[in-house]
Amino acid sequence: MKKNSSKATVLFMAQAGVIAAIYVVLTVFINAFNLASGAIQFRISEALCVLPYFTPAAIPGLTIGCFLANIITGALPLDIIFGTLATLIGAVVSYVLRKNKILVTLPPVIANAIIIPFVLFYGYGFTSAWVVNGIDLSIPFYIVTVGAGEVISVCILGSILLRALLPVRKFIFPTPEEQ
Image (cartoon, rainbow, N blue to C red; front, side, top):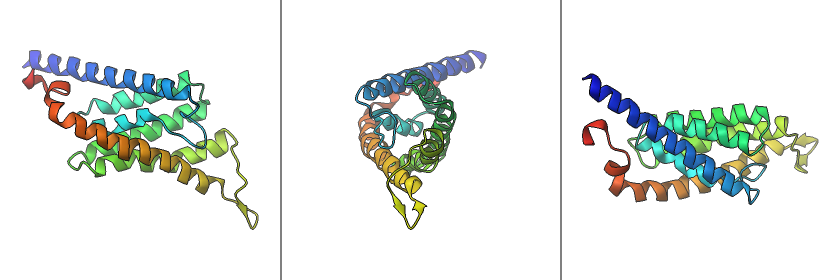
């Protein structure tokens, strides 16, 4: 019994580590095009947010990957903390909803669309020309822009990734018993 338990721990850690590394590489790559952060974000690494559908190891993998990617790309401490928190929340709720391929894509979109606009506004001081009757509409604007980037990354690219991984899931995400 103990041998199987240690095998499961090693598998979990390996999967989490690989997911974190891929997230970092993809984020650093897209950051070269200035798309990893800012008012308009298109992190292709966010497509990996569908991986909790396959393994709980995706939760720490995505969280650690986001944390490291934010540090490497020069995010402010507020962004490092709350951006990572948004990814953690999205990953946990995606894992809870893992029985449904469509619903698993929504938590990262919602978490990021709610949290990141406040980081952009208060952390980076991003304001916009969206002032109507003296009311600054920057945060609603960022909800739309960050949400749109997340929809493209997670709902579209993530769904394509999920469908591509389904036929090979037992090879990529085996349980210890399947090895």
